[in-house]
Length: 131
Image (cartoon, rainbow, N blue to C red; front, side, top):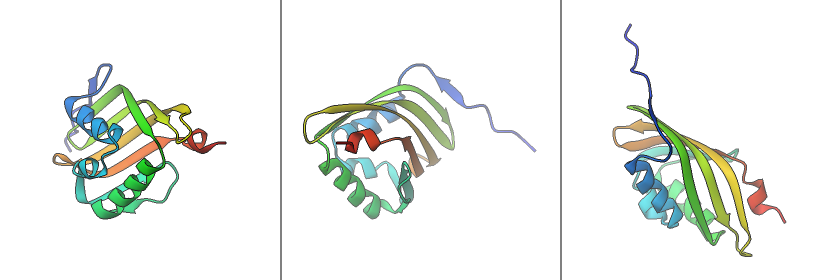
């Protein structure tokens, strides 16, 4: 039984495709973001229920974007394998009251070709919504 080649470590920062993905998120552009996803993709943010399909994911992401004034991701490291991309960093959210909140994140993206089939985000968003 053959083994998959080891994941390729990327130094500090993101690959060009990750930069485009996070640029869409930081622009709060839900249609551009879901274009990175397979039509039947699943998406889970933190401990929220998983969503299935571009339409459901796009609607939820657009609702989240509407709840904040902005966001900015800084990818500190990423690792790429033909079937998976893993990255971690910091995201700074600007709340509706203009307060900024920075939290660490880790994302796992299972790939189907060039598209994300499963997008898992591990981040504690409680500080974003705290009073």
